[in-house]
Image (cartoon, rainbow, N blue to C red; front, top):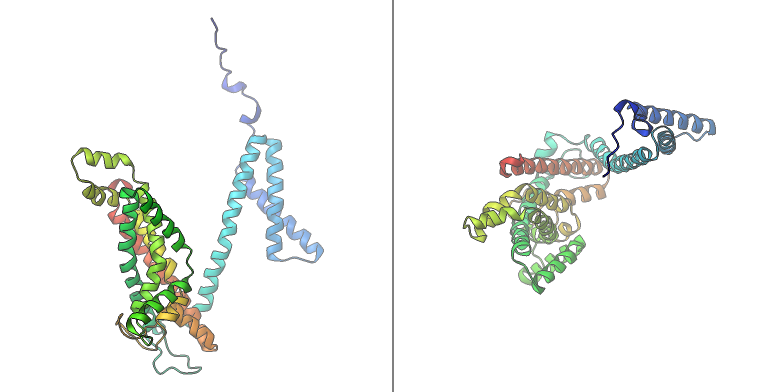
Length: 354
C-alpha cells in the first residue's frame, strides 16, 4: 500500500513560480532599446527612423529574452520570445497597410470633395481643375453589382453542391477547376469576355455587361471557396437534429445550414467584391471610358473608378490629383460596403451568435 506525499504548503513554493518580471518591463525594454539604438546611430552618423526602429527591435528581442531567461527561467523566456516575434510580425504587416492608407488620404484629399463626387468630366479639357467622378462612381457600382448578381448565385449553389451533395469524380473535377480559376490573371478574364461578346455581338460592341462578365469570372472562385469553408464549419449535429424532426434535406440547407453560416457567407461575398472592384485591365478592355454617366449596362461604354484613375494619372498634371482622389473614393466605397455587409450578417446571423 502506497501513501501519496503531502503537497507542499503554498508559502514554501520555490523556483520559477514566484519569479516574474513586472508588467511594465516590456515597455521599459522597448523604450531603453530605442534610446540605445538612437544614441548608437547618432554616434556613427547614420541615424534614420527605419534604422532606429530595426536596431531597437533587435536589441529589444535580445535584452528581453536574456533578462527573462535569467529571472523567469527558460520556459517563460521562450514564451516571451514567441509573443515578441508574433507581435513584431503583426506590426510589420501593418506598416505597408498604414503607409498606403496615409499616402492615399494625403494625396487624394486635395481634390476630394462634394463637387468632385457630384460632377463628371463633360467639357473638361487640359489642365482644368474642375471635373469629378460621378460617372465613374455610378459605373463602378453598376458593373460590380451586375458581376455580383452573376457570380454569387453560381458560387453559392456550387458550394452547396460540393458540401452537401458532391461525391465522386464530378465533385473532384469541380474543385480542381475552381482552384485553377482562382489563379487566373485578370487580363485573361477580360480577354475572355472581350472575345465572347465580339463573337456574339460584333467587334464594335462595348457595354457594362462585358465588364460584369469579366469580373464575375474573377469573383466566382472566391465566392465558392469562402462559402464552401463556411458551410463546412456548420456542425453536423444541427443537420442531424433537423433530419430527426422530419425536415427534408433541401429545407434543412435553406433554414439551418445557410442561416447558421450567413455571417461568413456575407463576409466571403464582400471579400470577392473587394477582390474585383479595383480591377483595371479587364474593364479597360471591355468597358472603356467615357466622360458622362451611362446607366445602361447593355449598350455603350461606361466609366469606372479604376479606369478613370489610370487614365487621369496617365494624363498627368491636374489629372494626377484626380487619380489620387479616385483611389481614395474607391477605398471609401470598399469600407462602406464592408460596414453594410457586417450589419447584414449581424442581422441574419442566429441570435446566439450576435
